[in-house]
Length: 178
Image 1 (spheres, rainbow, N blue to C red):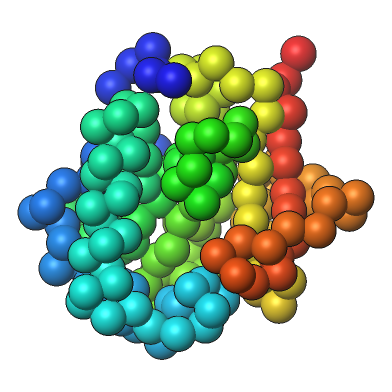
Image 2 (cartoon, helix red, strand yellow):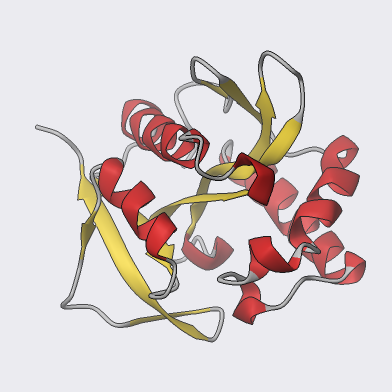
């Protein structure tokens, strides 16, 4: 599925740019941070090699589908603050679910950026993708991310147990507004 518009998401404070090799070092710093990865990737920081594999997959996803996890920058300062966007769940386009995903450096937590990203991704997804719902996946212990998804309008689906990259997670979803 290709979006009706180029993948570039802007909010009042942030911009999410398509994935690119030029952001690889930023992504390495993010994914090697133990605090960031505590609830991602089985709770372990990713090596440069593993991050290379992930980067290749998200760039391939972007080239194939026109959307992916992009680089998030603060518009005012130009600082890289994390990654975020939309991807087929587990980067697997043989199933229908598209995930809203985000990860920010700890110094940007508690400032409303994650909620801003999640809401903007939900809005962009429903505006430019032909989907009836979007999903969010979180580690059940990640209470901050739970609040972010709820503020973005997502609802916990208790009828579904989901294992994501080998870890049991909570599955959230939001349906396209009528």
